[in-house]
Image (cartoon, rainbow, N blue to C red; front, side, top):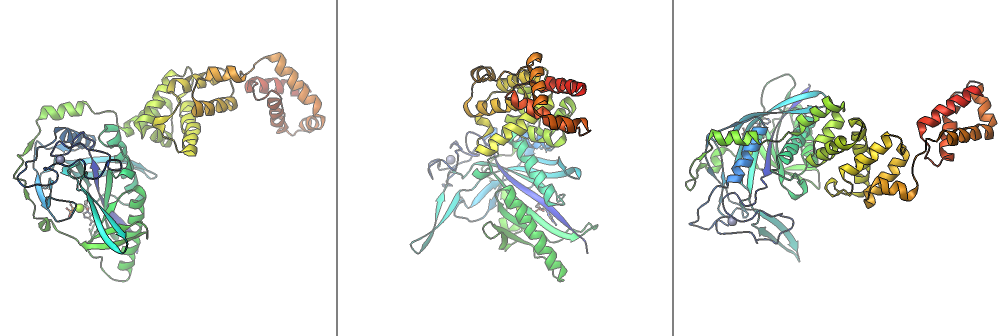
Length: 483
Ligand code: ADP
Ligand code: MG
Ligand code: ZN
């Protein structure tokens, strides 16, 4: 039997607001701040306190909703979702249930098989929980709780079960991350836990429409964990079906170290949470004017940007997607392309993705911290374009610029890297190369044309790599013809 996987993703994205969802405690980098230093009676869940909605978080949620083509609902409601965890001091989470902030959107992503449209069911606001650290030491087991993250605004974005492969799940997740970053509502720093995934997975006979029992894998904190978790579940479920069994509907955890899922609990239903309207918050009303203003403020999103690069610069789908995925990289590319005189956008793209990319991979540096400015790279590429330096020399100059900073002009002057197009000099070098290598010249004359390339290499080496390759080729062709 042929199987097909059905996946729905739930993404929890922290909203990078200055303060928390319902109080004025600052939102801090959870990997930096001392535990339990940004907590107040509201987010610590003391009795008798009142939550107040963070307007900025609502606006960020609206931005995401609009970027995903959702309807922003005029009135949405906050509900209490009750459950008891040590990192949730109130004993409930304020969330949205039947009336979310945004609903019915669509995200189109690119895969190796072409475009895929994934429907967005809803995007709703809620608050994050605290963090538990489990400690085992001196034969004792205990857990430490840090409430800094309690009450940090979260947007939960839920798809319809439209995803049909691991590749599509990954494309969805990376595209969504790119949008969140482009909107400036989330840093996208996965290692800091600002985006977390939950994957709902079922398997069915290919070509049917049934929705079989699904599992939900919680706490997938990286793209890799998400991919591995889904792959593991597809395998496990197919095995169960092949042996005539049924997959149990349950909630699973992901064991990163052992690369497997494990049962956390049988799937809870909504009634297990005893949702009821949050009595301390009025309905959230967003007037159409506000929605209109937020829509008008949306920046160009990565996919539109990539399409523009394809149209304007003739870049490939893959290259344009790489450049447009990150606003910092995209802006660097655009500034360089604009400042580079007479240099095709394709060349600029190739140098950023090739040389600069290789440098970042090698050193582990961040694009944000590059020592080179767009104007500096543009100047170097312009000099290469008009023949002042050749490509090989430009690469050497670029690596100096990346490591030490400075300008191309300074480096060319200091190291005497100026390219020469001096015809007399080049002609004499070509003549010398031919005279010194009679047997190679002979085999060229006997029809071995590749020897021309070998001679080209000789002349370039004699010129210390500084000869204009175009002029060398022309002069070489001329003298070979004569010989
Ligand atoms: P809950 O509210 O219990 O979390 P939902 O029905 O809202 O469940 O669905 C949660 C997620 O599970 C959604 O992303 C949805 O697309 C996905 N989903 C629903 N049914 C299935 C299924 N049979 N197989 C895979 N994913 C599913
Ligand atoms: Mg769920
Ligand atoms: Zn607080």
